[in-house]
Amino acid sequence: MSMQRDILVIDDELMVTQAVVKVCSAEGITVAAADSAPEALRFLENSRFRLVLCDIMMNELDGFQFLEELDRRGIQTPVVMMTGYSTVENAVRSLTSTGTVDYISKPFTADELLTVIRRSLRCSVILDEAESAGLPRHCSLSYVPCPANYYRLGYVSWVLLEEEGTARIGVSDLFLKAAEGIRELELSLPGEDLLQGIPCAFATSLDGSVHGIICPMDGKILEVNADAQSNPSLVEKDPYFRGWLYRILPPNPENNLQWLSS
Image (cartoon, rainbow, N blue to C red; front, side):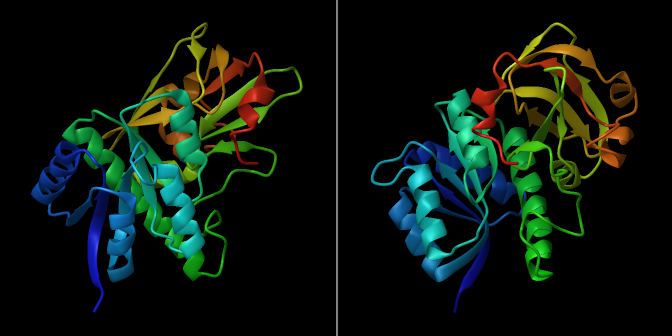
């Protein structure tokens, strides 16, 4: 009989798996731990999990090879990628890999870990609702996907290129739904430089959790949406139009677009 648990954590560092087990267990979240991708695949053959936390840098199979193996076997358990090598490339590649719903860099605090886990579990439920309704997982009645002429970084953020060579960026409706309500937005200032793969804003949800919004494109901030900053509910009501976050001047958008989905 297949056992169902909440989380499968995969990391060849015992301290990491022990920390995840301790933090999650204290919150009533059931966890199984594996120290390699092959061991994790054996777990997945015999048990069902709601979410997988997977390190990127591992022996035998690394995190991205593990994702490829999940795809080959038709296993759709959503994955959060973890890494102590917190580079822009790792963050962006993680968010754009098939099967990944989120990314977290090590070391992380207990609050950061629980925020990502809870958001990812809710994201998974929403994606499953789409699939059960016979829709592609990126389409759902529960959230509004990005418009056709937008580019998105995973399920987190989006960018719209403008004719003047500028671009608008914002946060996706799925990310907002998974965060379950935004009461406050912390935005950067005009003139600051944003980097793809690095948080460009922080959203505090109704329960006090803080969610980093990863930037989809490099650029200098030309304008901050003051209406969205003063009224975060605007971002939730209209995330792709009136609820944009920044207008930026991207120095080389073609380099960033290779990592984005249209």
